[in-house]
Image (cartoon, rainbow, N blue to C red):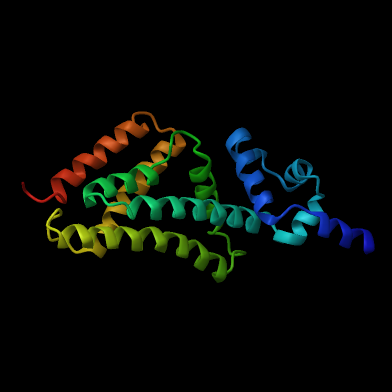
Length: 204
């Protein structure tokens, strides 16, 4: 017991473990991320990882939350700039869409949502996933409302338009992340720009 307590005290901070998990996904793919492999990477036993995270599902969700926290900070910085709403909306879309096939954040996101279908996943975990979605949605609604109030955007309902735009972004982003032929990142961004020009931008 004393040896185990010493190892826990000497273990890396949880954020380092989450960063290492994300790095392993980026470099080797999600299928290579195991509790044993991550433990070896961190100099910890898989048992001690389970002590902190209880299950691989919890490790994946915590890693996603950590990654989303970093994206959220970047999103807040981009949206707080003194720039037209359209420029900031472009920045939002650019941050949302995956960098390319097997983008590690989107790979992790898809896996967490896939696992959430299991009956073993509790309501609290689903609420945490919904909180991530909610943060993206609220920021987009606020930006759309600002653009409408300034006359940059057509007088759309910000909440309804945000729901539809994010559904479009999610569908295209999944195509990019899985490497569906004909839907590379630049092609997707072009489609989104056309959609926004046709449905949102105010007439000059």
